[in-house]
Figure 1: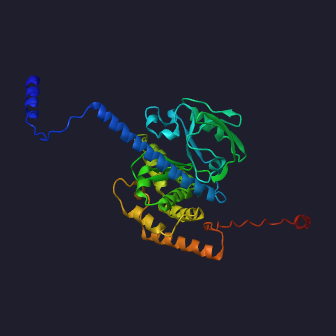
Figure 2 (figure 1 turned 90 degrees about the horizontal axis):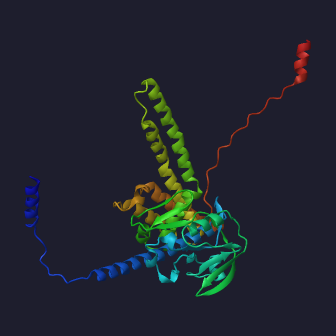
Length: 380
């Protein structure tokens, strides 16, 4: 039977219609060469966009260092080697990056201490102060771990190799808001904060019309991090998740162990906690973000129109729109925030977000005990 089915399938597939064009012959070597060319274009585009995003992020982080809660120090250098980028794709990155086993500089932020010191893209880092840079696998990871412990703006001495010549330069790190910007190679239009970093996709860079719009995105995510939204959401998840956990325990108890064991209520209430005040957090990030972008010198006059576009266009590839609803309230609020900032500038006031007044807790007055009167009563 199986034999006849195979014969039938072979017969039917032979009846399928095919294109009639007589195409040119293409050799496999030609295909591979063209594939390599396109990959090189793709990775060159990624490096160009990464540099743009990091320049804007560095500018915003340095401009707001005096008001950020989490402060760090940065030279403005991004470095990598063939292993951290991926040995299979390292050859597709631009040649000027000088990618191999040794760690090399792949980006230097504009107006950073590294740029002012004379460092250049493609310089291979041999040593900083007394720390010799490793090579090979996990080299970048080791360096980040070592320097992650050092939170200082003291002058450092860097030894680099440039065109087979060894050079030594001095640089001092810039004070920054310590939320590095990471660009991912994803086409989806999205950006988010995780409490420690700001992550953006190539999709949202392509979607943005100019540097001002990219700055608004970075500033918005910086506000999420710096204004404590991520930690607040985690706390809300924990609080309401605990409510669900108690309900599950009660269900198990009153059902005699026949229900509640799958933690259904814990999961449900944790999800509710994750969404609690989500719109309010977005509005607060809009508010703080406009301030952060203005303080860095970006044009905020069309901020309301940009977020309206993000929220109103809702094709499947725009993930960010699901968490940034284009409500009339948010549109008006952003416009009013710009007006508020312009008014402060006109009056020469500090450009810092206004904060709610914390409710004052009244201290209970302690009643003074009159020991003399107590003893007199006893004596009587």
